[in-house]
Image (tube, rainbow, N blue to C red; front, side, top):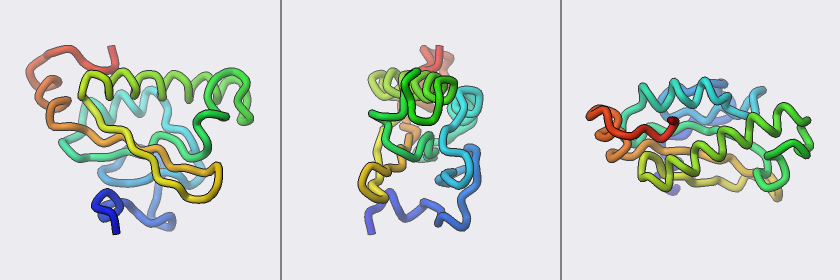
Length: 125
């Protein structure tokens, strides 16, 4: 088993939201931007959150197969997480469930927590 999967919840345990070390992919496929902000402001190093389950390349943006509003929200979340990854606040990984079905996961980095604690530049500004 890969070390990242050790702390991941099973699908039966998964709940939408940003609980520590939980993959929330039952019912809610996309983490909202507000929930991402809350997770970022309260998480500890190595805490992880699943922010989407599906196929990001097809599902983000206004042409999303889940609808325009859902696609725009996913694009907003994914773009914010890419910026956070570029600044070292989070690490982004994906887990393949089936063809064209991935769970996208953000892991809080130690640098992100230190920057947040010192009042430095936040990834969600």
